[in-house]
Image (cartoon, rainbow, N blue to C red; front, top):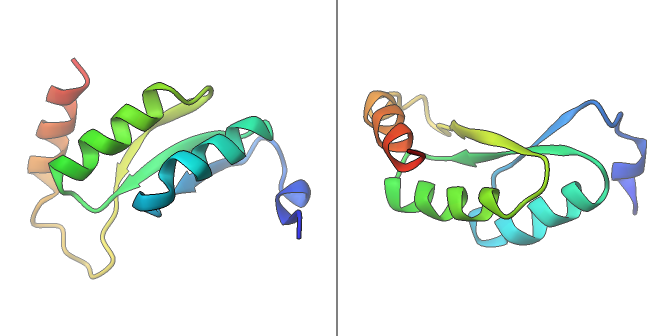
Length: 86
């Protein structure tokens, strides 16, 4: 309980649970942390993350995350995300 109270405030928290992204981002932002969204590469999911990150104070970005060493979509993700943020 309250384990985040023991994490140094200069640590950036990476939130990865898509369906709880708003709650997670808000929780860590409200407790003084910078945050990053972790996306598996799907551009529809990236859009959701970017929308949530835009309304989160101290959100610093989004990162490509693979849970199975799948880097085939990394280039398209980078191109797609940079296009979404312009």
